[in-house]
Image 1 (cartoon, rainbow, N blue to C red):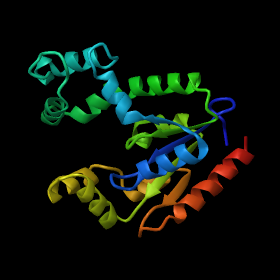
Image 2 (cartoon, rainbow, N blue to C red):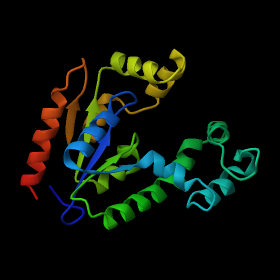
Image 3 (cartoon, one colour):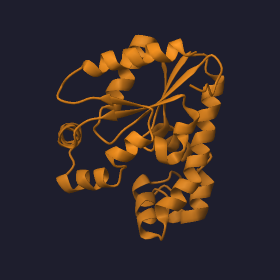
Image 4 (tube, rainbow, N blue to C red):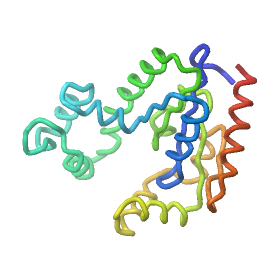
Length: 205
């Protein structure tokens, strides 16, 4: 295993919506006192006024993406602008991903924790996985993922299906990961698998 940061182990967590990434992260944080970096939260922080992506997004999509107060970027309006423009998602990702990666690197460099968890739905596509020592794909059956999403969010079936269809296939997730963590059927055997993987990573330090 090639270490990206001396004296630190960086685990990248990814997987489709409803796979249970948050449950895995919570377990690792509590058991190993790991630091947690949530890339989606960073992306939202950088979109705030004064954030690194705020002005570039306004330049690309115009001030129509702002809330009625004329200050904050509306995620709903931004999503519509992206969908309505040619190559919208590619252009959006071209603006946001490099700046999110830059911020993640800063946090990794300044962290004093020996174990750091980086979670991102687009960990593989964005390139964030390349700065992690070990990329974990949290896998669950599609039907189970749909049930979890329904239980946590009041979304119609068609919206859930659209979200799942826009994410990487299971095969692509597996191809871009170093380790697959099985998280389905209500079993918590994944905890033992996670512990064993942590032990292996520790032995490679």
